[in-house]
Image (cartoon, rainbow, N blue to C red; front, side, top):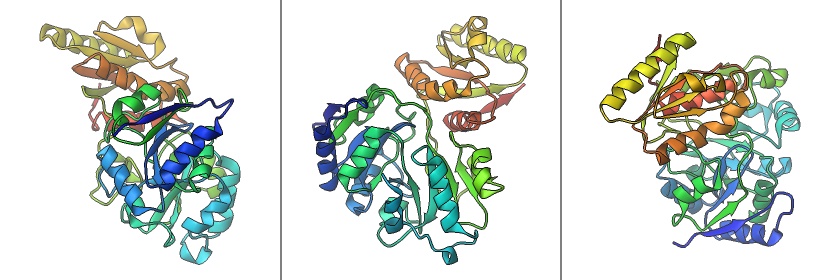
Length: 357
């Protein structure tokens, strides 16, 4: 398959390019596009064949639900129930409207009861649907041009770090899909927060830029699903819960503890690896850049800037792939705020391999 790449400027959007992408999706094809979080791989969310194509292009397990992207709140009624009697949490309609007013467009995905309009191929066989409204103008324009409902996971081969730069998308998707919209680098760098409102209490299934404290201003106490630790055999209700995700090719380990001990341990391991002709990569904060003696040391921002860490994380993991690292060690990061999302993605990438000193 020949993949068309269309360069598009957020400050001067070419409607002809968006129309081309929209026509492809309407016809059952796939288009990769930027959002404020990561690049998405989009198909018609209401077309079962399109969702099957998404799973095939990514090599993604078909029980891993896709997120339906919309461009206006009015589109929600067709795909999700807003009836209070369908939910255990009281006042669903009011809560969803308030969440949308506060966080849409933006990096928040809400899980609701699906309507018959949404095929099970899109929801991974579940009776629930995950919905969000991205803030990126290219994404919003493409959604509108395609009919209003785009199912879109991240635009990468399943299990690899999500794409935050156009070269990541081309590397993984060229020849697999019909079109790629090149909008340059994304803003946030980690996927949206996912909150489930279909149980008896609000539960975060995936942390992101919208935090539990943010959601608590509307929902009251918000819980975190224990399945985030990866110790469940249940079908995943949201992307990234069950399967290994975000992983570089090299073996990745997180090292936690006092900074001096962490640095000493990683340097010791790097020396052992070097003697065995293995290349070692290190992920660290800026303050520790000169303290490591590994093959390649990459910084993710200051110790007090987790937003920058989120923005850089996936790109750094892919850079290590390009450098053919054999082993990677990462410092642990403060889990407050978006730091929770950072540590969630790192832990998944490491296959939950953590050394505590």
